[in-house]
Image 1 (cartoon, rainbow, N blue to C red):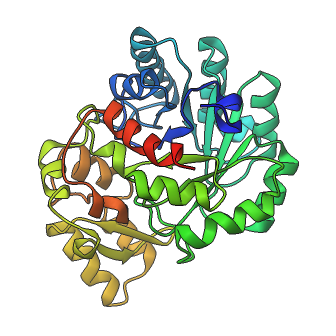
Image 2 (cartoon, rainbow, N blue to C red; image 1 turned 90 degrees about the vertical axis):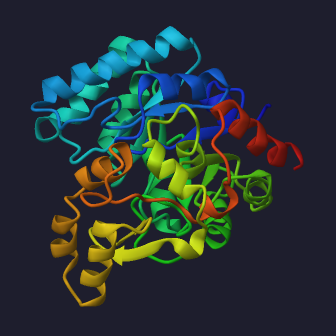
Length: 327
């Protein structure tokens, strides 16, 4: 398929697999890229324990890169979460930047705050930057274009993982950001996109690509715990619970810890208290990688309603493409 997202990223199908923190590894990402979409190694790709140093984290990522390359020679990306524009203050991003240059990884998926200095450094080395702000706004879109971002992601409140701070659904945020971009850079849609219908709707709203998490988590290749996959394919959006936390909200399957977090939220506990009780993002590892909802949580987007089986990533990509090809 020829469109701007495909041309910019060097891929066949305008779909990006969300980085998903602990829930990626080289085998999974390689399968996504081999199928023609863009696989992305998350910040803790392939790991089960917290790295003890920046150097260990970089070497862990290098190992996962090798696994991807053993599967395919097609493009893939790495998740970048800059904490500061200054390399002296952000050694992890500096290390990942140097690693990407060495390993010729051509796409950085930047999540969180916009860091123009990092955008420039990646672009100077021929690395494309896909930027996914927590809250996409017209103002952020203008700043992203000025910074040189290649593609921006408009994320609706339908998504899983770290939810936007404003409860604006995918159907509302995508055309807002498309209009703000005014054709200057392509916009990708994120949030609740799991089948042909939601893919078709995203493109009808002006998106030129799909940024997908939940659908890929429910693939055969994703390292999401089997018991969590089984639970998730038997629920719909009404079964998920939502609680306040840093930076705003999280959704989860029901379980011992998620129920506790919900009660804390309803009782008026602070976001900081709830974030600590969920064991920050390590709770995602415990709940989703280890399958233990007594110690962690299991976050999914509202598109989980449309998933009823576990299948290969190639089938998931084909189904999404059916919706796109109808446009």
